[in-house]
Length: 306
Image (cartoon, rainbow, N blue to C red; front, side):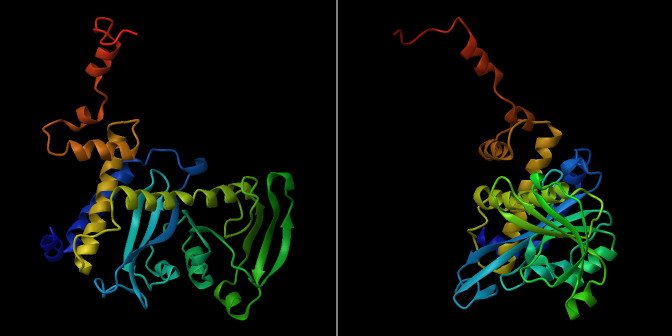
């Protein structure tokens, strides 16, 4: 297996994953969008996979550690990864915005690590919307404030312009700043967006939905074991990651097309133990009715009479 991972080009599995992603997106296209918004909503984030520097010298991260980063754009309709970029650990998250495919009219939800006003302005000019959090010390002036209901958690809803010499040139248009007190955690959050139409509470709910990408990272790390690798070359690591992504997307397709109520994890477990059996997938994933009928039958003998 290690030899195969080293010798077979990872682009084969990348192409397979892209075909599966396209099919999964078409399968989930009719599902309701997040918050019933009539547009695509994406969550952008990255996760770091720690490696041993002496074995993975091609992936430098720190002086004593290697790592790869999985930069992922997740379509929240179906939790399908639509864009994945694998880099070494040194690539800063914000640089991914330079290669990110931008869809006009869509929402891109990301944390404050992606705040770069020049790149955000390019996204704005492309007709897309972003929702993120402000960095501390952001120099801006308030133009006006919209009325809010503070008991809903929205402290203020403002239109602002950037004051900094460079930042004002990189983003010369009006931005929207929302201060929100999360009633569940009592955390005070400050959101930044270029959308001026949606209610402030909807913007806060959009940012909260970003956690789906964190759940995606947790799922593939725990259940598809991409934290341990069978070979140490760059080709091997990328091959194993793309195989894991293909597995996740394939299970999502099966779950949707067969209209299963099972979780993705349950589907994965069933398929993993019946992979080499000549059993139709639908039969393998459906509950065994014969066993349930036997359990409910009144003709069954009682082995123990208490």
